[in-house]
Length: 435
Image (cartoon, rainbow, N blue to C red):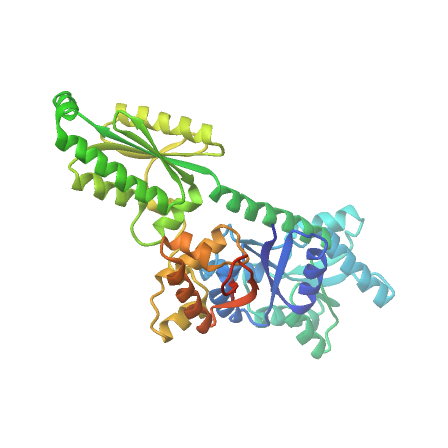
Protein backbone atom coordinates (compact mmCIF):
# COMPACT_ATOMS: atom_id res chain seq x y z
CA UNK A 1 0.00 0.00 0.00
CA UNK A 2 1.41 3.35 -1.07
CA UNK A 3 1.35 6.14 1.51
CA UNK A 4 0.82 9.55 -0.07
CA UNK A 5 2.88 12.21 1.70
CA UNK A 6 2.88 15.89 0.85
CA UNK A 7 6.24 17.70 0.94
CA UNK A 8 6.41 21.46 1.49
CA UNK A 9 9.60 23.47 1.24
CA UNK A 10 12.02 25.48 -0.84
CA UNK A 11 13.41 23.99 -4.05
CA UNK A 12 16.78 22.84 -2.67
CA UNK A 13 15.26 21.22 0.42
CA UNK A 14 12.65 19.47 -1.71
CA UNK A 15 15.37 17.90 -3.87
CA UNK A 16 16.89 16.37 -0.74
CA UNK A 17 13.47 15.19 0.48
CA UNK A 18 12.63 13.69 -2.93
CA UNK A 19 15.93 11.83 -3.06
CA UNK A 20 15.18 10.18 0.29
CA UNK A 21 11.55 9.42 -0.63
CA UNK A 22 12.69 7.54 -3.75
CA UNK A 23 14.52 5.09 -1.49
CA UNK A 24 11.25 3.94 0.12
CA UNK A 25 8.81 2.09 -2.18
CA UNK A 26 5.98 2.67 0.29
CA UNK A 27 6.00 6.44 -0.28
CA UNK A 28 4.21 8.39 -2.97
CA UNK A 29 5.50 11.95 -2.63
CA UNK A 30 3.49 15.01 -3.71
CA UNK A 31 5.72 18.09 -3.83
CA UNK A 32 4.67 21.70 -3.13
CA UNK A 33 7.27 24.42 -3.50
CA UNK A 34 6.74 27.82 -1.88
CA UNK A 35 8.63 31.07 -1.46
CA UNK A 36 6.53 33.08 0.99
CA UNK A 37 4.71 31.67 4.00
CA UNK A 38 1.40 33.19 2.89
CA UNK A 39 1.38 30.78 -0.06
CA UNK A 40 0.86 27.90 2.36
CA UNK A 41 -2.75 28.92 3.05
CA UNK A 42 -3.85 28.10 -0.50
CA UNK A 43 -1.65 24.99 -0.73
CA UNK A 44 -3.10 23.41 2.42
CA UNK A 45 -6.69 24.46 1.83
CA UNK A 46 -6.61 22.88 -1.62
CA UNK A 47 -4.57 19.78 -0.84
CA UNK A 48 -4.91 18.98 2.87
CA UNK A 49 -7.04 15.89 2.31
CA UNK A 50 -5.22 14.66 -0.77
CA UNK A 51 -2.41 13.22 1.33
CA UNK A 52 -2.12 11.14 4.49
CA UNK A 53 0.72 13.10 6.10
CA UNK A 54 2.92 16.17 5.47
CA UNK A 55 6.67 16.62 5.68
CA UNK A 56 7.90 20.20 5.97
CA UNK A 57 11.40 21.36 5.14
CA UNK A 58 11.76 23.14 8.47
CA UNK A 59 10.06 24.61 11.54
CA UNK A 60 8.84 27.85 9.91
CA UNK A 61 6.29 26.38 7.47
CA UNK A 62 5.26 23.72 10.00
CA UNK A 63 4.55 26.17 12.82
CA UNK A 64 2.92 28.62 10.44
CA UNK A 65 0.44 25.93 9.33
CA UNK A 66 -0.22 24.89 12.93
CA UNK A 67 -0.82 28.47 14.04
CA UNK A 68 -3.23 29.03 11.14
CA UNK A 69 -5.07 25.73 11.87
CA UNK A 70 -4.23 24.54 8.37
CA UNK A 71 -3.16 21.19 9.85
CA UNK A 72 -3.15 19.52 13.25
CA UNK A 73 0.01 18.47 15.04
CA UNK A 74 -0.52 14.80 14.15
CA UNK A 75 -0.75 15.50 10.41
CA UNK A 76 2.84 16.51 9.77
CA UNK A 77 6.46 16.80 10.93
CA UNK A 78 9.71 18.40 9.88
CA UNK A 79 13.25 17.00 10.03
CA UNK A 80 15.20 18.81 12.75
CA UNK A 81 18.51 20.38 11.82
CA UNK A 82 20.91 18.24 13.87
CA UNK A 83 24.43 19.19 14.81
CA UNK A 84 25.80 17.16 11.90
CA UNK A 85 24.02 19.40 9.41
CA UNK A 86 25.51 22.45 11.11
CA UNK A 87 28.96 20.84 11.25
CA UNK A 88 28.85 19.92 7.56
CA UNK A 89 27.88 23.47 6.63
CA UNK A 90 30.58 24.94 8.86
CA UNK A 91 33.22 22.70 7.27
CA UNK A 92 32.19 24.07 3.86
CA UNK A 93 32.68 27.57 5.26
CA UNK A 94 36.23 26.82 6.48
CA UNK A 95 37.04 25.14 3.17
CA UNK A 96 35.87 28.14 1.13
CA UNK A 97 37.55 30.68 3.44
CA UNK A 98 40.75 28.66 3.75
CA UNK A 99 40.78 29.18 7.51
CA UNK A 100 38.69 28.70 10.62
CA UNK A 101 35.95 31.30 10.73
CA UNK A 102 35.40 32.33 14.35
CA UNK A 103 32.36 34.60 14.04
CA UNK A 104 29.08 33.38 12.56
CA UNK A 105 25.39 34.25 12.75
CA UNK A 106 22.74 31.52 12.87
CA UNK A 107 18.97 31.25 12.65
CA UNK A 108 16.43 28.53 13.41
CA UNK A 109 18.89 26.54 15.50
CA UNK A 110 18.53 25.39 19.08
CA UNK A 111 21.21 27.01 21.23
CA UNK A 112 21.98 23.82 23.15
CA UNK A 113 22.44 21.90 19.88
CA UNK A 114 24.91 24.52 18.64
CA UNK A 115 26.92 24.58 21.86
CA UNK A 116 27.05 20.78 22.08
CA UNK A 117 28.25 20.49 18.49
CA UNK A 118 31.00 23.09 18.89
CA UNK A 119 32.07 21.56 22.22
CA UNK A 120 32.13 17.99 20.91
CA UNK A 121 34.40 18.92 17.99
CA UNK A 122 36.66 21.30 19.96
CA UNK A 123 35.31 24.41 18.27
CA UNK A 124 34.69 26.40 21.45
CA UNK A 125 36.61 29.34 19.95
CA UNK A 126 33.83 29.88 17.43
CA UNK A 127 31.57 32.74 18.52
CA UNK A 128 28.00 32.67 17.24
CA UNK A 129 25.06 35.04 17.26
CA UNK A 130 21.76 33.17 17.39
CA UNK A 131 18.61 34.78 16.05
CA UNK A 132 15.98 35.00 18.81
CA UNK A 133 13.18 34.45 16.26
CA UNK A 134 12.47 30.71 16.34
CA UNK A 135 8.86 30.34 15.26
CA UNK A 136 7.56 31.06 11.78
CA UNK A 137 9.51 34.27 11.21
CA UNK A 138 9.13 36.35 8.11
CA UNK A 139 12.25 36.39 5.94
CA UNK A 140 12.61 40.13 6.43
CA UNK A 141 13.33 39.76 10.16
CA UNK A 142 15.95 37.07 9.57
CA UNK A 143 17.62 39.07 6.79
CA UNK A 144 17.77 42.11 9.06
CA UNK A 145 19.30 40.04 11.87
CA UNK A 146 22.09 38.59 9.71
CA UNK A 147 22.76 41.96 8.06
CA UNK A 148 23.05 43.71 11.42
CA UNK A 149 25.43 41.04 12.75
CA UNK A 150 27.63 41.27 9.66
CA UNK A 151 27.75 45.05 9.47
CA UNK A 152 28.47 45.39 13.20
CA UNK A 153 31.35 42.91 13.00
CA UNK A 154 29.67 40.28 15.16
CA UNK A 155 29.82 37.75 12.32
CA UNK A 156 31.90 37.05 9.24
CA UNK A 157 29.38 34.72 7.63
CA UNK A 158 25.66 33.91 7.93
CA UNK A 159 24.35 30.37 8.26
CA UNK A 160 20.61 30.21 7.55
CA UNK A 161 17.94 27.57 7.20
CA UNK A 162 15.96 29.70 4.71
CA UNK A 163 16.61 29.73 0.99
CA UNK A 164 15.02 33.17 0.56
CA UNK A 165 17.20 34.62 3.31
CA UNK A 166 20.29 32.98 1.83
CA UNK A 167 19.67 34.40 -1.65
CA UNK A 168 18.94 37.92 -0.37
CA UNK A 169 22.07 37.99 1.80
CA UNK A 170 24.14 36.95 -1.21
CA UNK A 171 22.62 39.83 -3.18
CA UNK A 172 23.74 42.20 -0.42
CA UNK A 173 27.27 40.85 -0.62
CA UNK A 174 27.11 39.10 2.74
CA UNK A 175 28.75 35.64 2.82
CA UNK A 176 25.89 33.21 3.36
CA UNK A 177 25.51 29.44 3.55
CA UNK A 178 22.34 27.37 3.54
CA UNK A 179 21.76 24.68 6.18
CA UNK A 180 19.69 21.77 4.84
CA UNK A 181 18.39 18.88 7.00
CA UNK A 182 20.56 15.78 6.52
CA UNK A 183 19.19 12.68 4.80
CA UNK A 184 19.33 10.74 8.05
CA UNK A 185 16.90 13.15 9.71
CA UNK A 186 14.60 13.05 6.67
CA UNK A 187 14.61 9.24 6.67
CA UNK A 188 13.66 9.22 10.35
CA UNK A 189 10.75 11.58 9.75
CA UNK A 190 9.53 9.51 6.78
CA UNK A 191 9.56 6.36 8.93
CA UNK A 192 7.45 8.11 11.56
CA UNK A 193 5.03 9.56 9.01
CA UNK A 194 4.56 6.22 7.23
CA UNK A 195 3.95 4.50 10.56
CA UNK A 196 1.46 7.16 11.56
CA UNK A 197 -0.42 6.87 8.24
CA UNK A 198 -0.49 3.06 8.42
CA UNK A 199 -1.84 3.18 11.97
CA UNK A 200 -4.65 5.44 10.78
CA UNK A 201 -5.55 3.07 7.92
CA UNK A 202 -5.33 -0.04 10.08
CA UNK A 203 -7.28 1.74 12.80
CA UNK A 204 -10.22 2.08 10.44
CA UNK A 205 -10.04 -1.66 9.79
CA UNK A 206 -10.43 -2.51 13.46
CA UNK A 207 -13.50 -4.55 14.32
CA UNK A 208 -16.33 -2.52 15.77
CA UNK A 209 -19.29 -4.48 17.09
CA UNK A 210 -22.48 -2.66 18.06
CA UNK A 211 -24.50 -4.43 20.74
CA UNK A 212 -28.16 -3.52 21.25
CA UNK A 213 -30.06 -5.04 24.16
CA UNK A 214 -33.75 -4.36 24.80
CA UNK A 215 -34.54 -3.85 28.49
CA UNK A 216 -37.67 -5.56 29.76
CA UNK A 217 -39.25 -5.22 33.17
CA UNK A 218 -40.60 -8.38 34.83
CA UNK A 219 -44.16 -7.62 33.70
CA UNK A 220 -42.97 -6.64 30.21
CA UNK A 221 -41.05 -9.89 29.94
CA UNK A 222 -44.19 -11.95 30.58
CA UNK A 223 -46.15 -9.74 28.19
CA UNK A 224 -43.48 -10.14 25.52
CA UNK A 225 -43.79 -13.93 25.60
CA UNK A 226 -47.54 -13.91 25.09
CA UNK A 227 -48.13 -10.64 23.23
CA UNK A 228 -48.28 -10.62 19.43
CA UNK A 229 -47.76 -6.83 19.52
CA UNK A 230 -44.47 -7.08 21.40
CA UNK A 231 -43.26 -9.85 19.11
CA UNK A 232 -44.15 -7.63 16.15
CA UNK A 233 -42.05 -4.81 17.65
CA UNK A 234 -39.04 -7.10 17.97
CA UNK A 235 -39.45 -8.27 14.39
CA UNK A 236 -39.61 -4.67 13.15
CA UNK A 237 -36.52 -3.83 15.23
CA UNK A 238 -34.65 -6.74 13.71
CA UNK A 239 -35.58 -5.64 10.17
CA UNK A 240 -34.49 -2.06 10.89
CA UNK A 241 -31.16 -3.24 12.34
CA UNK A 242 -30.67 -5.50 9.33
CA UNK A 243 -31.02 -2.43 7.11
CA UNK A 244 -28.39 -0.57 9.12
CA UNK A 245 -26.07 -3.60 9.02
CA UNK A 246 -26.28 -3.54 5.22
CA UNK A 247 -25.45 0.17 5.20
CA UNK A 248 -22.20 -0.48 7.09
CA UNK A 249 -21.36 -3.53 4.97
CA UNK A 250 -21.69 -5.59 8.11
CA UNK A 251 -23.75 -8.50 9.40
CA UNK A 252 -26.49 -8.74 12.00
CA UNK A 253 -26.59 -11.53 14.58
CA UNK A 254 -29.68 -12.18 16.72
CA UNK A 255 -28.31 -13.39 20.05
CA UNK A 256 -31.76 -14.18 21.42
CA UNK A 257 -33.31 -12.68 24.53
CA UNK A 258 -33.88 -9.40 22.60
CA UNK A 259 -30.16 -8.90 22.08
CA UNK A 260 -28.52 -8.07 18.73
CA UNK A 261 -24.98 -7.57 17.46
CA UNK A 262 -23.89 -5.74 14.30
CA UNK A 263 -20.43 -6.73 13.08
CA UNK A 264 -18.54 -4.18 10.93
CA UNK A 265 -15.28 -2.21 10.88
CA UNK A 266 -14.72 1.11 12.59
CA UNK A 267 -14.19 2.75 9.21
CA UNK A 268 -17.58 1.60 7.94
CA UNK A 269 -19.32 3.13 10.96
CA UNK A 270 -17.38 6.34 10.38
CA UNK A 271 -18.53 6.43 6.78
CA UNK A 272 -22.18 5.98 7.79
CA UNK A 273 -21.85 8.83 10.30
CA UNK A 274 -20.60 11.10 7.50
CA UNK A 275 -24.11 11.28 6.02
CA UNK A 276 -25.19 13.62 8.81
CA UNK A 277 -27.04 11.38 11.29
CA UNK A 278 -24.85 9.32 13.58
CA UNK A 279 -25.16 5.56 13.78
CA UNK A 280 -26.18 5.81 17.44
CA UNK A 281 -28.83 8.43 16.63
CA UNK A 282 -30.34 6.13 13.98
CA UNK A 283 -30.65 3.23 16.41
CA UNK A 284 -31.99 5.53 19.13
CA UNK A 285 -34.69 6.85 16.78
CA UNK A 286 -35.78 3.31 15.88
CA UNK A 287 -36.01 2.14 19.47
CA UNK A 288 -37.84 5.28 20.63
CA UNK A 289 -40.33 4.92 17.77
CA UNK A 290 -40.99 1.35 18.92
CA UNK A 291 -41.23 2.52 22.57
CA UNK A 292 -38.46 0.13 23.65
CA UNK A 293 -35.96 0.76 26.43
CA UNK A 294 -32.43 -0.34 25.59
CA UNK A 295 -28.74 -0.58 26.36
CA UNK A 296 -26.25 0.20 23.59
CA UNK A 297 -22.55 -0.68 23.53
CA UNK A 298 -19.92 -0.34 20.81
CA UNK A 299 -16.94 -2.65 21.33
CA UNK A 300 -13.76 -1.98 19.35
CA UNK A 301 -10.88 -4.43 18.97
CA UNK A 302 -8.16 -5.63 16.65
CA UNK A 303 -9.89 -9.02 16.35
CA UNK A 304 -13.50 -10.20 16.40
CA UNK A 305 -12.86 -11.95 19.71
CA UNK A 306 -11.48 -8.76 21.33
CA UNK A 307 -14.41 -6.67 20.08
CA UNK A 308 -16.92 -9.23 21.37
CA UNK A 309 -15.24 -9.25 24.78
CA UNK A 310 -15.38 -5.44 24.88
CA UNK A 311 -19.10 -5.49 24.03
CA UNK A 312 -19.69 -7.86 26.92
CA UNK A 313 -17.60 -5.64 29.19
CA UNK A 314 -19.67 -2.67 28.11
CA UNK A 315 -22.97 -4.43 28.82
CA UNK A 316 -21.78 -5.35 32.31
CA UNK A 317 -20.86 -1.71 32.87
CA UNK A 318 -24.14 -0.15 31.67
CA UNK A 319 -26.13 -2.76 33.65
CA UNK A 320 -24.36 -1.58 36.82
CA UNK A 321 -24.60 2.07 35.75
CA UNK A 322 -28.14 2.54 34.36
CA UNK A 323 -27.63 6.29 33.88
CA UNK A 324 -25.13 5.56 31.10
CA UNK A 325 -27.06 3.65 28.46
CA UNK A 326 -24.69 4.22 25.52
CA UNK A 327 -20.95 3.61 25.87
CA UNK A 328 -17.92 2.81 23.75
CA UNK A 329 -15.26 0.30 24.87
CA UNK A 330 -12.09 0.80 22.84
CA UNK A 331 -9.22 -1.58 22.12
CA UNK A 332 -7.56 -0.57 25.41
CA UNK A 333 -10.74 -1.49 27.32
CA UNK A 334 -11.32 2.17 28.11
CA UNK A 335 -15.02 2.83 28.66
CA UNK A 336 -16.38 6.22 27.62
CA UNK A 337 -19.69 7.81 26.72
CA UNK A 338 -20.38 7.79 23.02
CA UNK A 339 -19.32 11.02 21.35
CA UNK A 340 -19.64 11.36 17.59
CA UNK A 341 -16.58 13.61 17.77
CA UNK A 342 -14.39 10.54 18.21
CA UNK A 343 -15.18 9.71 14.60
CA UNK A 344 -13.45 11.83 11.94
CA UNK A 345 -15.66 14.12 9.89
CA UNK A 346 -16.15 12.73 6.41
CA UNK A 347 -18.56 15.44 5.27
CA UNK A 348 -18.29 17.60 2.17
CA UNK A 349 -16.31 20.12 4.23
CA UNK A 350 -13.37 17.73 4.01
CA UNK A 351 -13.42 17.43 0.24
CA UNK A 352 -10.58 18.96 -1.82
CA UNK A 353 -11.16 22.65 -2.45
CA UNK A 354 -11.67 22.27 -6.20
CA UNK A 355 -14.28 19.54 -5.60
CA UNK A 356 -16.25 21.88 -3.35
CA UNK A 357 -15.93 24.74 -5.84
CA UNK A 358 -17.00 22.60 -8.81
CA UNK A 359 -20.00 21.15 -6.99
CA UNK A 360 -21.08 24.60 -5.86
CA UNK A 361 -20.67 26.13 -9.32
CA UNK A 362 -22.82 23.41 -10.88
CA UNK A 363 -25.28 23.34 -7.96
CA UNK A 364 -24.64 19.62 -7.55
CA UNK A 365 -25.60 18.23 -4.15
CA UNK A 366 -22.35 17.17 -2.41
CA UNK A 367 -23.64 14.26 -0.30
CA UNK A 368 -23.05 11.48 -2.84
CA UNK A 369 -19.70 12.82 -4.19
CA UNK A 370 -18.49 13.17 -0.59
CA UNK A 371 -19.49 9.60 0.21
CA UNK A 372 -17.75 8.31 -2.91
CA UNK A 373 -14.58 10.30 -2.23
CA UNK A 374 -14.29 9.36 1.44
CA UNK A 375 -15.13 5.70 0.80
CA UNK A 376 -12.25 5.45 -1.68
CA UNK A 377 -9.90 7.13 0.80
CA UNK A 378 -11.14 4.98 3.67
CA UNK A 379 -10.70 1.72 1.73
CA UNK A 380 -7.50 2.95 0.02
CA UNK A 381 -9.03 2.37 -3.43
CA UNK A 382 -7.23 3.70 -6.49
CA UNK A 383 -10.14 2.90 -8.85
CA UNK A 384 -13.90 2.56 -8.69
CA UNK A 385 -16.66 1.13 -10.90
CA UNK A 386 -20.44 1.38 -11.01
CA UNK A 387 -20.57 -1.99 -9.24
CA UNK A 388 -18.61 -0.62 -6.27
CA UNK A 389 -20.71 2.55 -6.12
CA UNK A 390 -23.86 0.42 -6.08
CA UNK A 391 -22.54 -1.33 -2.96
CA UNK A 392 -21.73 2.03 -1.33
CA UNK A 393 -25.04 3.71 -2.08
CA UNK A 394 -27.26 0.58 -1.91
CA UNK A 395 -28.93 1.57 -5.16
CA UNK A 396 -29.16 0.16 -8.70
CA UNK A 397 -26.14 -0.19 -10.98
CA UNK A 398 -27.92 1.84 -13.61
CA UNK A 399 -28.26 4.73 -11.18
CA UNK A 400 -24.58 4.34 -10.21
CA UNK A 401 -23.53 4.56 -13.87
CA UNK A 402 -25.51 7.78 -14.19
CA UNK A 403 -23.85 9.29 -11.11
CA UNK A 404 -20.36 8.34 -12.29
CA UNK A 405 -21.09 9.80 -15.72
CA UNK A 406 -22.19 13.09 -14.12
CA UNK A 407 -19.06 13.26 -11.96
CA UNK A 408 -16.94 12.53 -15.05
CA UNK A 409 -18.58 15.44 -16.85
CA UNK A 410 -17.75 17.63 -13.85
CA UNK A 411 -14.13 16.45 -14.22
CA UNK A 412 -14.06 15.16 -10.63
CA UNK A 413 -13.32 11.63 -11.83
CA UNK A 414 -11.85 10.29 -15.05
CA UNK A 415 -11.89 7.00 -16.94
CA UNK A 416 -8.65 5.03 -16.65
CA UNK A 417 -9.68 1.94 -18.60
CA UNK A 418 -12.58 -0.33 -19.52
CA UNK A 419 -13.00 -3.93 -18.42
CA UNK A 420 -14.88 -6.71 -20.15
CA UNK A 421 -17.79 -8.23 -18.25
CA UNK A 422 -17.47 -11.62 -19.95
CA UNK A 423 -20.96 -11.33 -21.37
CA UNK A 424 -22.69 -9.44 -24.19
CA UNK A 425 -22.96 -5.71 -23.64
CA UNK A 426 -20.83 -2.65 -23.17
CA UNK A 427 -17.62 -2.96 -21.15
CA UNK A 428 -17.62 -1.45 -17.67
CA UNK A 429 -15.77 1.84 -17.20
CA UNK A 430 -13.15 2.06 -14.43
CA UNK A 431 -12.65 5.50 -12.89
CA UNK A 432 -10.15 7.23 -10.63
CA UNK A 433 -10.40 10.44 -8.61
CA UNK A 434 -9.15 13.71 -10.09
CA UNK A 435 -7.32 15.48 -7.27
